[in-house]
Length: 218
Image 1 (cartoon, rainbow, N blue to C red):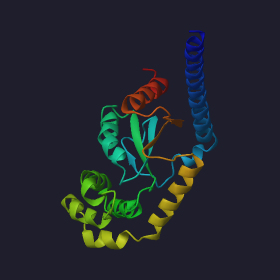
Image 2 (image 1 turned 120 degrees about the vertical axis):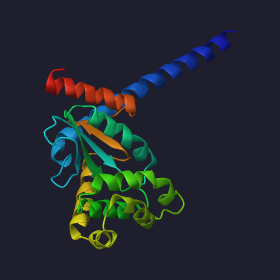
Image 3 (image 1 turned 180 degrees about the horizontal axis):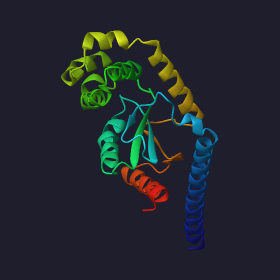
């Protein structure tokens, strides 16, 4: 009997220690992420970064995304709807995190579309067709061209523009910045410089609401 009680007591202590350790680790992770963002604020937004929403918005969602990332695809309409419903108070700033195979070519296609003012239309088409061009075993980003034709883009011009050296510079800068900020998975969110550590759509909305209240007093 005493041995059974001892075993149960030991198990309870171990569970308690694990829980405390997990909480402390989570707190440390939050602190480290916040410190990296604070120490490298200049790495959050660059002049080349695409912006969706009002440039004058006081609340900026910075999203490091990967066009081949399934979670990025799922979050994209959520983030856009949050911006659209903000009455000009919130904007989205896109940064690239080309972690998946084929993502770099997809980014080049998006940037070529941006040169024709078709960026957001191309982004929609790229995410919509992601299951076709970005299967896990053999991504084929060249298939994106078939799906962005409906945007009215000049495909021949875009295919030439995707090799513009400016796009290579954008990719290099974004990759350097994500390393500075400790971004290791996508999507990676920052709202007015604060990292989203507890991941999820509700958590993202809560952080946005917090920053809107701080910026606009609402």
